[in-house]
Image 1: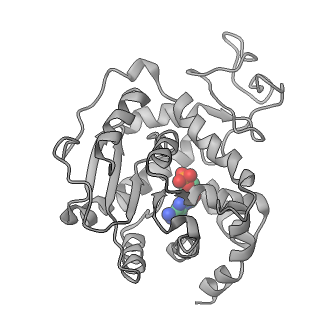
Image 2 (image 1 turned 180 degrees about the horizontal axis):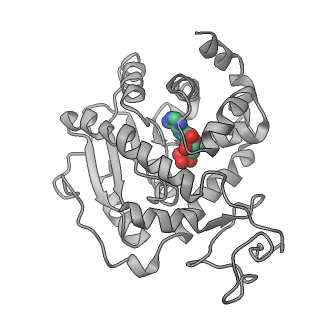
Length: 295
Ligand code: AMP
């Protein structure tokens, strides 16, 4: 309880830099958001684009997309590196509702050195999950903002069935419910290659990949390092996300399969889950997504 209260007390500090409401300097959110979008695009393994695994479960064509509520409460679901970050801006554009990424919010908190950031930093770097109470509290506050009144897209949340239940309860309070769970599916081995090769220019969010989007500084045969991985525009060193290591990714994927995937079973009975093959070119993924979004 004390922890939850302490979370509440730091919301002011946490939410200011991360919210996208008009009263706030939204540019502070940009680097992380841009980073995610670009990373997912650039990290796409071109060689695998055509070796698509068939999508499982319900197909886009027979998917019933709304659960009865007017508000679109969408969960953008998928493992790290599935392309959520690159598809989200297009969904935001089409639906005109904000994307709420708990990962971006937490990274902003870590960068700001807030109390929440201090609590989350180490567990995030190791690839573990921060507490349900912490992320639920963050989302609870965020969805009170005006820009969420018409709906919102949850990215990276819920991550556990417990979080999903807490979300349902929260939504129930305002007569809302999850209307769409869009699950992007990509095999683990592809994710490892996508994630572990990505490097980013911290200030601009420009992203690169050691194999699929190399910076000019990485000459053929050279080993990727802070000396050889430099931003094309500024020449500054690129960096890797603290949790984009093979070790942390292993833990993230294990957590995803054990704790996050069961969320789909939780929402399946409501008929709101749509599973899409995301091991194809981003444009093709978008075409599938577009078909299941509310008009
Ligand atoms: P992401 O950018 O979504 O991959 O999130 C990065 C990290 O933030 C995760 O590996 C977790 O440590 C933490 N995180 C983000 N969202 C959640 C959540 N809903 N529950 C617990 N931890 C989270």
